[in-house]
Amino acid sequence: MPGYRDHWKERLGMVSFRLNEAPVWLHAVSVGEVRAAEPLVRAIQQRWPDVPLVVTTTSPTGRATVQQLFGDALYCAYLPLDLPGAVRRFVQNLNPRIALILETEIWPNLFARLDRQNVPLLLVNARLSLKSLNGYRKFPALITPAIDSVTRIAARSEQDAEHFRELGADNRQLLVSGDLKLDCDSPADTDTRIRVLRSRIGERPVWVAGSTHAGEESMLLEAHRRVLQQHPDLLLVMAPRHPERSPQLVNLCRHAGLHYGLFSGPESVGGSVQVLIVDVVGELVFLYGVALVAFIGGSLVERGGHNPVEAAVAGAALASGPAYSNFMAIYQALTAAGAVKLVDGTAELAAFVVRCLDNPGYRRQLVEASLKVVNENRGAVARTMVLLEEVIPPAAP
Image (cartoon, rainbow, N blue to C red; front, side, top):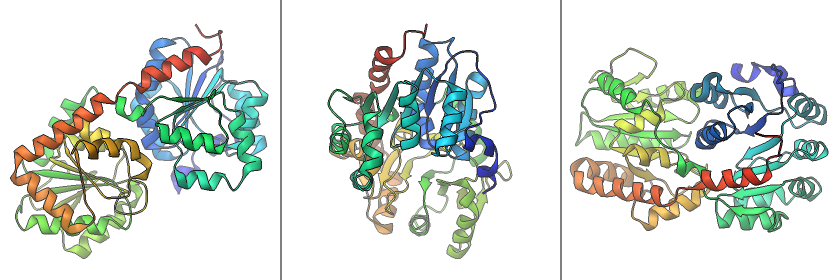
């Protein structure tokens, strides 16, 4: 893919910038992790405004999201390949005062190099699914030293912490900090961006299928076809997890006999457009703001689901398939509060969308319940910052 070929030297550990002092370094693999890291990045910038901050990603969409969110306020690069020479060059060139690795990213060579150079290493918003745990267990000679080299592990939930214990972490390393995603607020320009979107879409009702994957998109389009029988002016906004897959969605729409438009296309979305395909990065958070219903993708296929918090904060009624293992804690809280509709296929999803359109009171109850869950579970950024204050070397101001 062309995006992966850009900045290829960084994959070998050769960063394109030079810093006069040791930076704080944070790694967030792709779009979801970058957005989860945003409130933590802002807090670090506020606490240590004169210390350089470097954010690395693995994917081109992750890098684009960093640049969109933070502009020139920090340095951005790709994480090098986990090869001895590449990580040696990267760590020596960067010389970080502390390394923060988000979620499930365990790189044996990188961790060993950081340990060798006495760089404190924190796993932040750390999650470890049972599947990942079982996978790592197959390579104890690599993973055990990697876990031993970690200074502290700020786990999202007690279940994640227990999985790290089973991988060899001890209680002195572990802290249950909560999920950073729950501390994410709407972007400052949200109201303006929503007004612009409304001027494009008009006043027709909208539902959004966000972060979708192959295998579930045909089901989503069939659900939309069913809802259109009762609500012919309804617009489905479909945002694939990877926008470069948009041509595949175009073919699915054609096969389903649905009129489609591309988000990058003409300014207005005419009434003949039944499905708007989001073929750009960075718009989903604003599109949730015009949605009556938001289906969170990766959950009707075995991809573990995606983050529902942005949609909840934006005021959309939440729906998800049953495969949400990557976000188990928040979905358990939402389910217990009656704040999300779990659907097992096309018919259930279509019925839920119709019910939300026909019954505003029911939809409002779901939205209020999900916001309550989010607000009651905030605080991960503050707990993580306390940990940074304890661990970050004294050289930081």
